[in-house]
Length: 466
Image (cartoon, rainbow, N blue to C red; front, side):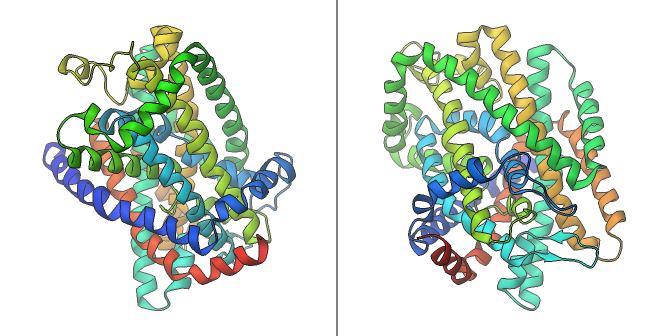
């Protein structure tokens, strides 16, 4: 079945990523940047203050909500996953170093997009008769379009998000963890899968509060660990940093120089890889992180909007960029394995899964490099599984849990655990393509609603920022 479906899914993704995705992501980011007078610049300092000044891990939340920091941590846990390590490496390998430039472009405009998503998530959330807060794209989609159209678009988004995040997304994360653990420690994939479903189940059954407490501790720890490792390597490769940045900018506009082939095809590949992996990395415009921001214990939508912008900044301009600098400065510079182009012999050894392990191993040694990356990837991907499961669960309850929410949660969680186990055993390429497809499909109804609710977002931004 995989052999039959794989080329079909690849073809669908090729069309979505190269055309629809790029247009929607850049278009809506540019639209909101202009309409909010570049809120990502004007309110960036305010966002930093809201995250690192007013908000801390000791804030208190109500029983049915999260603190603003917990909401941010849950969102960042979703954003900072395999997209930052394996996804970014795959983008560089396929699209060249210039793909990182286009990731930056997507992220810059994405900060305005995610501001809109977070403010709308707070603005349109509801509280049911049991005091449970419900929010996310399905609720602002219904706000944007009344009647049958709203129901259809919200239902389409909910189904796509359950498949993209709770099921297929979990497969990507567990697959990446299993591959790295097998490379670093020699642990069989099926053992890794069993460990993951046990650990995840213990957290899932604790509900939103347990998940929030776990991720708010994991996210700062994993970020600090990864940053320290990156800084050590960048210091050792300091003389290659100028060359590294030069390649990022050069190959963004001359990708054929390193990818080969014609300019048009290479340029399209660099941009599409940057857009596709940029979406998978920071998730701005995809509609995933608004589920977390909707649960924040804040009264002012603008506050959580600025907090959400910092999440994209940390994800792309800090974590992803550091990872990209490591890969390019160790493998693509004059003394690197890929300095002389993509020869067949090299490509048989290096792939998007082990590229970053090779990069870290060139400085730390192959053994410790693999262990370091596997450890970081475990924290990144594990926290992403937790967050994505929550987002998928919210949509599962929206679709199927109106009268029996507990039963809907139980069935959804059981299926999700099965996908986590399955992901540790199946082909990486097929899993990535499936996840990309459903991620791309999520963007469409979410983007349509964001355009329709421009007036609401602009009013909030004007009143609260500048």
